[in-house]
Length: 416
Length: 164
Image 1: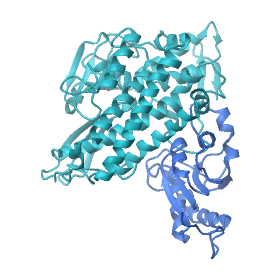
Image 2: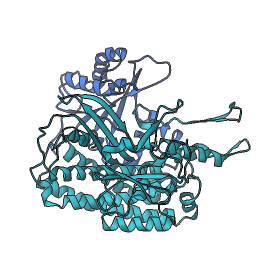
Image 3: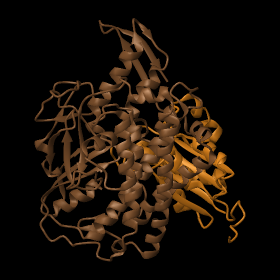
Image 4: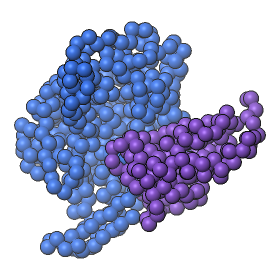
């Protein structure tokens, strides 16, 4: 989606209203698909089944055992619906092919619109259930609640997200807003000006760069007002907004911050909760768009006529703010590209969260059981997918933790 | 009911896309009125959605096994992957886990799943082509699969599909 928007910008073309609605509709379905998988299959096991449960039960099968077969089936069904909608609009659910400079390639038929509307009602139900699940299984459990709200992965950082003209959440377009550790607006900018605000630090030990707020400065992997470290993704987005534009999501948003007791909320594991609040927003917004009769308009593309030059496209990907910046020659052939991808923004914070996990579980040369899972939980809050960027069999997630003493001698190695 | 031949992988990550390329080659050689050939860059729960409603599913994917030659082919079934439910990250939904979930939920899953895994060399470089050794093996691998499945015979080894 960011790529499609960057190409619009390269050709300086404004897309028709129906094209914008179709893209946003597609994107809501993408969020629903992604957030359902992240919560139920990849992160939920920590909370629904429990962080200390038998590892053999800490998977989606354990989640289904706990929530029941009917709900398990509903999760699978709604994920499939979300895929179907992406396929209807995008041609393919994964790696869609619908975006063209100036709009989209295919209009939505009335029959398709009705089907999506029906699926939208189903999304609302699974979102309601998921919010209830957070209440019943997680918040009602003292240990889990402490785990989410406790200090284990707390970082007081800046937060970034995309907002509309009312500073409300928007996944598809708007200004990028950054708030400080106390929720005060630190910066608000048009995405095309991202280079004035974001710098990228390089460390020799990581192939990922470390984005930071340029005007605060790079001070290392530390939080606080003097460090340019900021976070993106679900909780960061909700921290950076002043509200959600749909009623049930707004209610869930208010409740979340009330329970967390602060806004911005700094508890890293609350990213999972924020994901469920966003699931509700995506469901409500999808239904709004699918119920809009104008979405079936045949005016879905403005043919670009300008000579292509340079353009920036930006969206809120499920894992955070995503920038695509292309430079082209006069024929539109790309000559240079710069991308800042969602999890890239969180590279520094992920390292900080892993460090906190290590500090809390390694004391006086004793490495506590559960270190591997606690390390995994640290980065899973931001992104569960580091391990599955490629899909070779048997699909296992390799994880190795090396513990060094103060003289940098290898003290212990844990591996799975 | 049909057989699904599913090529898996990422087609722009050199050898990671070998499953897709072999599936295309098999499709080119076999009269596939009773075999549906498709490709996907996905795993786990998404696969669960793709394979529903078929009698038999044949997957082709890449694999990396220590000490084996690039282009070697292994025939696996779900039992070969079962250990990954218990022994790896509890958060990685692999095919075996997804299948177990699907069965619990009573989804219409295939009676038979076969997995052809191809030893690869490099799956981290952006490239639409496979590495030379793996690329050279594609034709032979496709032929082996056709022979193993009996798809080279004049008649289908399975009953022709009946209209639903």
